[in-house]
Length: 588
Image (cartoon, rainbow, N blue to C red):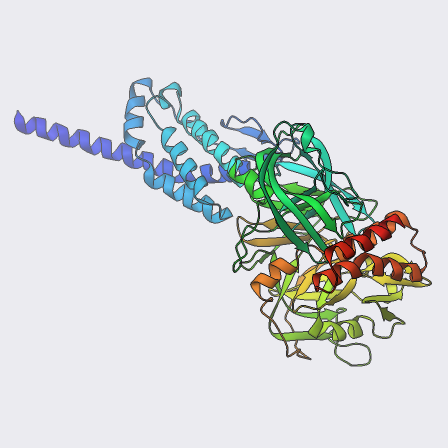
């Protein structure tokens, strides 16, 4: 009897093992379906997650009605009396969950938040209280996948949380609107990836010339510190203090940072009337002794207001609707047939790539047989900056660059500017070599519609420092993606762009011996963040005068606008003298 009981237990045990084996085979197969479903939902639902119910032979559609996939699952009835057995057999799915989590994480490289929530959701979905409500294995697995898909959509989707329309000032300056304070005051700021602080003009500012922030009308504003703080932006010098208030990205402040610390200007030199301030969008990365100020999109991410530390910029032509997407990106403006090319960025305060060389045109030589390409023995740092209008070429490379770009063309240089023919068909594209790819910049973006006589200004200038500074004339060729989560930048030609990105090898026919490491850290951050030389001068010029305005007046304009801040920064004149000179020009 005892032996018989033992044999019976053996038989039952073998049956249980056999059933368990079959179940785990099913799970092993279904895990790949679950992975695919979760990924498809997360990656396909760009605007919003469609309501889905994963049953056999069901066709799923996205938010725009497009077919996502078609699932065929085998119906296997689970008798109610054995539901508890199913649960008991497959409750411990730690291993399966880990596999799913690892595979999805490998696909997108997301952080541990996704792993934790995904794993917990997978385990919770298999509890006794969850499964008995389903009569079939298909229903059971479908509900589980639906649950996982919601997590996948949250973490793997690419759709932005907020899209800010950018106003275009003659392809030289792009501003977006933020809403500050309980009064939700709209302020037009430069969305600047080359600086940190959000900067507005205070009501107490004596020489500010644009819209001021009316802190007295906001009942949520608080002064953070009354200690005077100086900020220097190339040709602009600011004095002010810090305060806290709500900063929203839309008029309803539905996406907003409460109690956000920003900078209020009490005195300034160099900021024109065409902007109300700056929204810094640099990286939150300490360099040397410089610790970045608060960065709005970082704050929003930490507060759960946006899904990812990802920005997307479309800096279009004057006839386009330019925008900045925050928290993700859309593909609407991508050129048909083009995909994103990703480039690693170096650890720094700025968004930096490494330019290893450049070429004019598609050949390594010009028609006369001379070299059309140059290379450096080491890589050269290049800052990507939406707050700069021009491409600034390192001083050691500048002469060769201009000579190659303007070869066989009638041109001249004055006041640090290059002027050449207005016929863009006479120019060649410039190809910058980055990580095995040639990134093209076309004459459509670097030849401006700003003229002197029969010549047009080119959006290039010399940088006295030893690094490249790539502003709007470089970035306007592409939709640019700024992905802090994965420490990379993405480029894809937009729908009207003539530019291309193509793989290739660098032929160093002529080597530029000098190179750099990107400048000293403190000088790098403190002495340059935003190029007001372009956005202040030329942006203001377009707003005040026609493009055929006398070049002599342009020279006077330049002198009055930028000599005072320069002399002040060099310690040659006092701040009051610089301000008086600047005030006199503004009065003119």
